[in-house]
Amino acid sequence: MFTLVALLLTFVLIKCLKKPTKPSTNADMLPQETWKRISQHELVRAIDGFIQNNLLGRGSYGSVYKGRLDDRVELVVEVSHLHLEGALTSFEVECEVMGHIHHQNLVKIISSCSNDDFKSLILEYMPNGSLEKCLYSNNNVLDIYHRLTIMIDVASALEYLPFGYSNPIIHCDLNPNNILLDENIVAHLSDFDIAKLLGEENSMTQT
Image 1 (tube, rainbow, N blue to C red):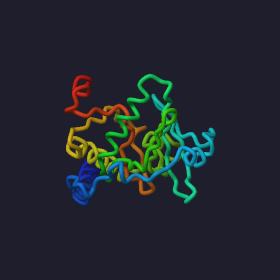
Image 2 (image 1 turned 120 degrees about the horizontal axis):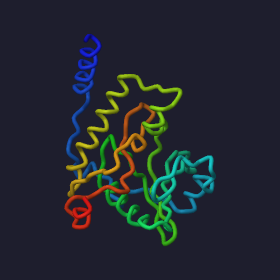
Image 3 (image 1 turned 30 degrees about the vertical axis):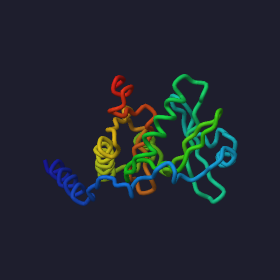
Image 4 (image 1 turned 180 degrees about the vertical axis):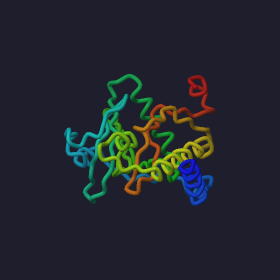
């Protein structure tokens, strides 16, 4: 009983300390026109030519690599496998969604690189990897405080999505692999390649 009360008090305290998320204004947004320009050549060099050691994982439509630019900035590069059916649509959806939303608990997009035979998204790097990796690691560092704050972070991101853009957004793929943790174990929701924009005719039908 004492443990349950202590957990409830901890949760309430964390909730009270969290700053409320204000609705996005134009000043908060990161339009695609402001994205950093990064060429395909720079990206290939940053991830050292797609070597296996830099591969972080594979998704339905592409591969994810860790990279480092010449200015020492670490980043993540999502490279679309354009030979797969649906990969181009997935890339376009993710660009559309992530190019118009901005929240402290969403992964920040740095830029994109797109030509006829190469398409990729460049995202901020999360040093502590995915929630799934942390949960099932032998060196699990997530105590009850971390778990509560991660739940609140994810809930804050999900609360923002229906209101942060002109069309409400549904993530559609919420799982521990798509929740990434930064150096302070703050959670950031990622992977919007199958997200739905409510209000657009096709997405409404699919949803």
